[in-house]
Length: 320
Ligand SMILES: Cc1cc2nc3c(=O)[nH]c(=O)nc-3n(C[C@H](O)[C@H](O)[C@H](O)COP(=O)(O)OP(=O)(O)OC[C@H]3O[C@@H](n4cnc5c(N)ncnc54)[C@H](O)[C@@H]3O)c2cc1C
Image (cartoon, rainbow, N blue to C red; front, side, top):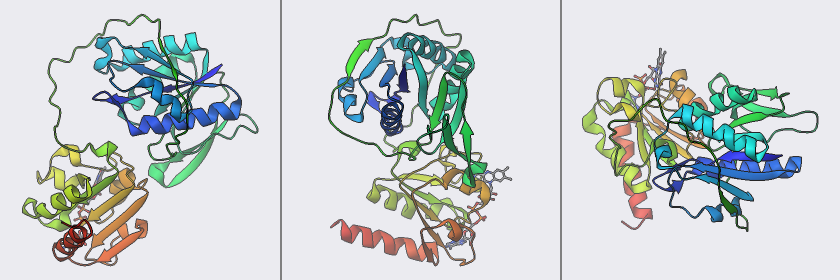
């Protein structure tokens, strides 16, 4: 029996969401008295043995180059083979784009109960109960999984990365990689940008910024803070910013440590994608804007006056 954790990676490096999943899985393994093992698909340059410091004992690797492109059906097939050979009874994915594509397929193939959006360690005192986020973060549910095999999708930023000592044993998994039924013919990756879903800090603008000509301040603050930029949906719909920056219910869901919302009203559909951020700072000229109810810190004022002052203050602090 073991806890098996999916190791998601980008440009050869393990994503933070997976380090959280490894730490979470290792803690569950300790809780239920079993082994924690990771698995990685595709080419990766990171030193996999080093992942032992997150509490796992073993890493199963399938370094087949055909797995460098995500095909959810192939990934699910290979995951099931690894899970069965490792005797995994708990399988953990980060609740990100790749986890959402693969985990449900794995659960269906293994007839496993699945909990997405997990926000805490399971309670194993009476069965196996996982707390999860529901209604776009407005409520929690506790879900009992009764099946022999359990699949959990851990929300980003819900569990801390816990580093200790130790090396993991790295083994080549003996699997058959099925041929993909789809083929990527062309991909255009954004370069030189901080990826929104991976960013620790996000600076985001809404319609209160009046027009794309006023985004210089948002970009400058983001660069100073090493942050990614984001926007509300009408901003992307109006073509002021690219669609890949649109966050919310119909856009990307993010959970950075710091979310700075500038000239955004805080509509429920926007909050649905950002309310898992650890700290929220809101700048809005309307003291009654709904976003202030979700904010940890708020500034009531005209963004076009406040933003330059924040930028100067950050520059001063950074000695720039
Ligand atoms: C099905 C559905 C799905 C949706 N999905 C999303 C989604 O995924 N993401 C999303 O963002 N929206 C989504 N929306 C739209 C959402 O309901 C809101 O309309 C949208 O979030 C509002 O964007 P906004 O806050 O930028 O603009 P507005 O609502 O126009 O708010 C602008 C804010 O800026 C403030 N302001 C104005 N001038 C200044 C100034 N000079 N300085 C400071 N503050 C100023 C105003 O007080 C106001 O609070 C969705 C809507 C529907 C119906």
